[in-house]
Image 1 (tube, rainbow, N blue to C red):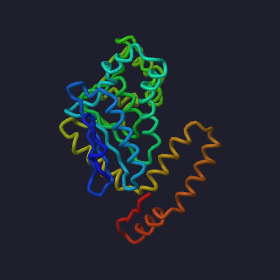
Image 2: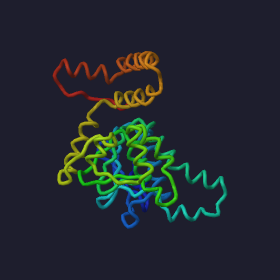
Image 3: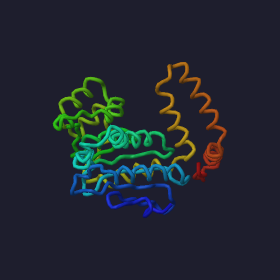
Image 4: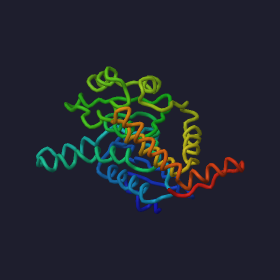
Length: 268
């Protein structure tokens, strides 16, 4: 897996020596790490690589210079003023495609927030499997200030929070701190800013040491079961569990436990 091929001038990628962790950084600090087409392209390529390269188990996304993302690049968007409806739809659909792909990819996706996470950045963050933040980070959806509304990012946000808190955020644009964001369900965990790197590394180490087969099948099962009724959920999950127990990784995990050794996981 060649990290240079996945990087561009606004998006940097690195890969751990064993290929299990792909780390990606939005690198536009002078523009608030806003998402332009380079960033969207980089995200797409990184997620595709996580699916095609069997070694990748965890994808970590963050922003450069201690700030995550201020949202979509409004200056790039303003160039569409006289564009056709097809061009508008093509441009606006790009963030939706990335958010959907974050759910579908076999690897676990971790978003690490420092500084601020705003607008489209909120959509990217809440589409991840895990969202961790420094305790001094802030979150918000200020699109109304620009005559817009957080249409696309509303989908993952409203799956994470209750209706009344979600509507408050979407329509007022009020920014909230990390502790409040965790309380209402936007975050997986809040870390002390001084310990952020160590805590993030510890989380990644925990996730990456799991069975890659269990990661990919567990993630697929979780997102696929959400919209089924209870009986259909049980029927579906029973079959998924049966398939998982037949895997090489489950056999290896059981043998390792009985022999009191570390498991030697295979690629998924």
